[in-house]
Length: 502
Ligand SMILES: Cc1cc2nc3c(=O)[nH]c(=O)nc-3n(C[C@H](O)[C@H](O)[C@H](O)COP(=O)(O)OP(=O)(O)OC[C@H]3O[C@@H](n4cnc5c(N)ncnc54)[C@H](O)[C@@H]3O)c2cc1C
Image (cartoon, rainbow, N blue to C red; front, side):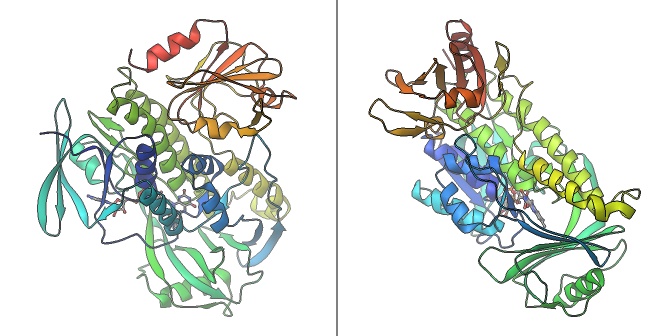
């Protein structure tokens, strides 16, 4: 049976959509199916982090996301029912080497809509109402059983990726364990709803208390807010507007906050789980299918997008027969530790918000400003690094960035005086080699024609990397630094031999 597409993606949330767009732009064919009848509703993953914006830049949608989103600069915090902090923080000014310095807020359904629009531009669409029911694999490919419109059919692909969320069918069919814990007593009622009577209207309102919390986050450009309110242990709660109204009054201690009719209501339970493996043969797990988080710290969607972008180029090389043996294994080697780190951080975030440390509570009013700014910078510094990963080789003393870090942006000048962004160079489907000289940079893209030499008149691009003249930096197709070595050394050829099929 010949393959009908190179890759089958199961699940069209942010992870599956990012992967589909990335594969298509790399010239790989894919199918993307989702068992729901249409797009998911609900604002859920609200925070879009800088590294995710860099991925969206590569997919050509960062501008659209930024135009639709809002920077969360205004925050009011309450301890119990009393306000203890109101602060407004100006957005960080983007610089040449850091074009996306801050996280922004955008309801997840909107982010997904932008990704689907990009998918359509790339010539694909989500097949909604199509559910994966079975899979078999052999040495050459995967045969998936898909149920759509009550009928069962098979689809043959070279690879399959389960981006099918926490209850992942793919994970279960592969028999991959998902150990961790579910806390039935740590629950929240979630709603997208108009909230009246809460000032300032454009602020995020956050109530902290003894084993309870509530957050109200206004959507950009709409009267709707996302409300997340914790439910007391053992309390029976139905997702209804009456219950939401009661909980909001209870947490805020106020009866003057008015709610509209929720556009979306759901009960969330705390799951903290990590898949034992991210790969079984030709099948992979990504996103919530591989890791379940607390919503604290905005790790879920962002980690899924990073999984997808880490996997995309590796799968593309494998499909094209250009991956060295073992390249696909580096997906789990790099992303499982990143998933574990995100899990731990979101767990810490949840416990300190739901139960602020007892010793801190009397002085919380005094330290809240510092605490929040620390949380903000931790949140901003979201990029997972692969310093100890199998694809990171730092052959010389490290500079400002090192192998395993995301490569910074920068601006070079063509001999004709045109400016060119490094991020635009990294968009090439292959590796990009930057060989730094005193005031010039030689740029080669794998498979590209002759190298181009650009001017780096004041040495700013070299400064962003913090390397000496005579250094070559090899950038992976996902924008991470793979190798830092002397330009004259043998390491570059050895590195590419290790990663690419000969
Ligand atoms: C209140 C709340 C706030 C959050 N805030 C943030 C935040 O600020 N930032 C952040 O990064 N994350 C946040 N998250 C987490 C985020 O929503 C998830 O991590 C994210 O949706 C995961 O994306 P995904 O694509 O991996 O999976 P999902 O979005 O769960 O998508 C999986 C898809 O797979 C489909 N599917 C399932 N089974 C099958 C099957 N057998 N066949 C075909 N299709 C199937 C489903 O229909 C679904 O559309 C939040 C979550 C909640 C609940």
